[in-house]
Amino acid sequence: MARYAYDRLSALDNSFLALERLDAYMHVASTQIFEAGPLSTASGGIDAGAIKEMVESCLHLIPRYRQKLAWIPFQNHPVWVDDAQFKLDYHVRHTSLPRPGDDEQLKRLSARIMEQHLDRRRPLWEMWVVEGLEHNRFALISKVHHCMIDGVSGVDLMKVLMTTTTDYEIHESPTYIPRPAPSGMELLTHEVMRQATLPLSILPGVGSLLTEFRDIRRQALTGARTIIDTLGGSLRPPSSTPINGSVGPHRLFDWLTMELSDIKAIRKTLGGSLNDVVLAVVTGATRRFLERRRVSPAEIEFRVLAPVSVRGAKEQGAMGNRVSAWVVELPVGEEDPVRQLEAISKRTAELKQAKGAVSAELLTQAAEWTPSMLLSLAGRNVTRLLPFNMVVTNVPGPQCPMYMLGAEMLEVFPHVPLFERLGLGIALMSYNGKLCWGFNADYELVPDVAAFLGCVREAFEDLRRLAAVKRSTLEQMPVQAARAAAAGNGGSDQPETPQKAPGPNGAGATAH
Image 1 (cartoon, rainbow, N blue to C red):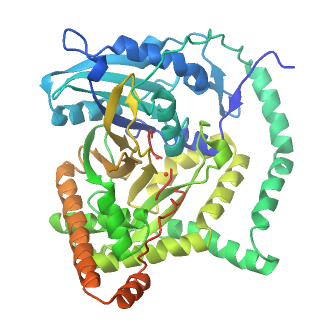
Image 2 (cartoon, helix red, strand yellow; image 1 turned 135 degrees about the vertical axis):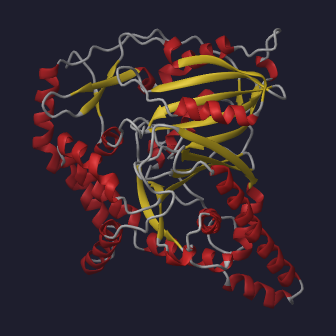
Image 3 (spheres, helix red, strand yellow; image 1 turned 90 degrees about the horizontal axis):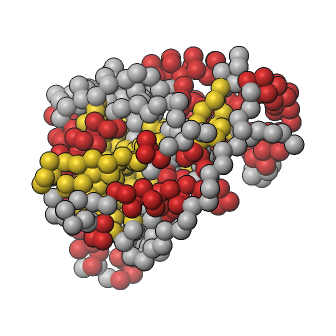
């Protein structure tokens, strides 16, 4: 038995390191707002020491949080090794807004913290306890590198650090004994052996993929079509827009909330999935924003990257990324919000039918054969040829109140990192009946991100108004005719099963 221990990063996890550069960090993040409750101190502050003690008691359940990167010689591929010098004080930090701090100040602080890179010599995460927020609230700003986590595993992590009731108990943490790290020569020897056996190790996965199709002919036709769909967009760049250009080092972070019941009511009346409704809202907002910037939407081919989770039930709670992606064209040239939603629903249905996410996962597996040096070079150049204009990731969170040491979490706003040439990214998380939107914008490209939020509100109100008009019309129709009309437009009284899709604690993972 080897005297050391390490975990190799997957090709996908490594790609998030390769994509990172000075002006484009690759950590996911979130700003969580809590009632102070029992964490209030006599001086009006927040008991950050108790939060640190709670985090320490949970670290044995998330061992990746006490691991750092090491590198295979010559191959330059990263692995995880235990950090023998781990210090919790470095990762859990305490700060304050000038009292009474408001949400605008918290947004500015969140952006400033999020735009700072994580130190690759240490475990790649930070948690900031922010006191001084008005109305007896405090915030947690969390940062985790995307190579460690995707949106679904971020939600799993939330469940580790919080409870569903006000009752809690801080258990004594097991003594941390870091495992010895391998030497460079040991890492290189194991990597040579791994490369030699890799073709045999992925053959079973390819075989299971092929069995999903009824016969060889259908598999060949469907597989070819999905791979063409996956790669086709990358061969034809999207239109240039005011939000696409060279990003700088500074960010703006903004947010808003909606009632999840309103989104469900729109879906039930107008059709599509919950994620289709979200994309329709983004479509209407983007159309308005382009017009505000004096750009004609009719001349724009606008695409979004919608991450798709491929995490299985047995992988819940595991760190790392199990995510693929769809590239969806948004019909920003269409003026009618209902037709926008219909076009999006049609496209996402085609992607589900064509198993587009599966084809992308197969391409990700093939990347395991790619030397890390080539992957790094590709990461530096791929952002120049991005086949999309924006990332929109939608993560389902817990639909019940969550508590940290008895303090209730009120809202959680996720944060998706920006690639080069992407000036705006949108991350959403549903939580306790709310849909929380987080908007990460480049400081120079999208200084008017607040105006984009206004466009989102207007687009949402348009859909809600049209859905209300249709519901009123259906209520005045005979029962049989109303049912037929609702069924013909995709409406259903049946609860919807969430569709797998990303993003963070952030990022990250599954769309409704």
